Amino acid sequence: MAYDEATYRRQAEEPTPTDPAAYRANTLAGADQRRRAEELDSVGETTADLHRRAEADEDGRDRLGIHLGWEVVLLVAAAAIGFLLWRLDGDSIRRPALDTLLITGAAIGLLALGAGLSLRAGVPNLALGPIALAASLQYAEQGDQGLVKAMVPALILAAAGAIVIAVIVLVLHVPGWAATLAGALGVIVFDQLRVAPVALQGTYDPTDHAFFLFGGFALLAVLGGALGTISPVRRWLGRMRPIGDPARRRGPAVAVPVLGALLLSSLFAVGAGLLLAARSDAPVIPGTGLEWTGIALGLALLAGTSAYGRRGGIFGTLFAVAALTLFLDYAARRDFDISLFAIAAAVFAAGLVVTRLVETYGRPLPVAGPADWNAAPTSAGANWSPDLPETWSTSTTTPRGDRWDAGPWGTSR
Image (cartoon, helix red, strand yellow):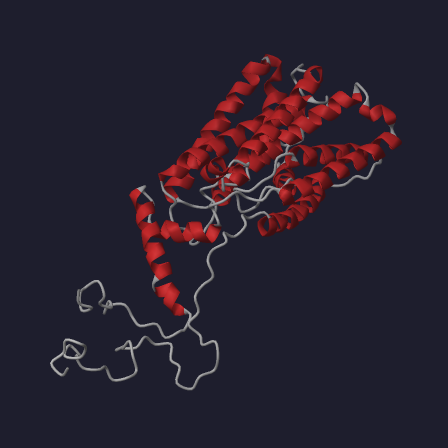
């Protein structure tokens, strides 16, 4: 076999590396990238998807240590606020006051669930608060016709609006927060058609089912968080997470999670609006509802859901909602008179800090690989060069001639 065959020829089209550490990048790593790109192309992904996946660390299981540690902090905070509330007024955590507290927690929890789901799907729903306020106004005005007749139109309109926004996001591939903000502004127009508080017309009392409503929220929060820790589910739900060029389309696989997240979050907001209106006999005051959007998104972030999408904890939403619900009752009993916008701003700011912690310490551990070969010399040499020699020889001495005539049978013997 001659060394001149194609197997041993150097590829002329590949440039010769000049950096000593570039041999592996040009050969082994390049071949590995081409091989992985071909594998991904065979299942419908492109080479660009390979680079985005590598940058986003989508392969591997997210570390849950930071989430579990932060959830312990949230649990301690909720217990501390509950203890302060009990010290202030022991009857506040006994029935019937406890029923109202649970209904408030279930309403705020539904908003936080919707915010967390839409955040994980990469399409944060900024219309949650306005939708909840619109549902409250709808129940206040039409509650005398019965719970079903009053709320079914609200559910239908919320679902239709969510589908329209999802189609806009998917077809135009625009950021979810921008599309939902446009939807929120439209709902605010509906909310501000009223110029005076609307008295309640219905007689539904949710305190009769307070434990079931709060228990349902808690079950949804924990089950949803547990499902989000499964790697395939997490990647499927968070495919809209901005990676690389955020304007690049992510393919048809994002349609179902985007549509489902926006639809469910909007329906959760309708349920939250119903509970907020029916928990007391006070009239519903028209407004924007954006304070509830801030509280919902802030709680989701504070619970450990990343603002970038995909990552989240297990019990964080339950503990964060419990802590805020107890704080709101404690502040009302102490006459602190804190604006909901101020509370939303504080919770949101704290949630942004938690997002940074989650993204820093929650990403998968780097995969250990073989050490890169470095062509740098181990000792300083005057004549050393990293370039491959154009010619080579197995010996530095002049080769000897044929010696077939030597030996016991040679002609010279």
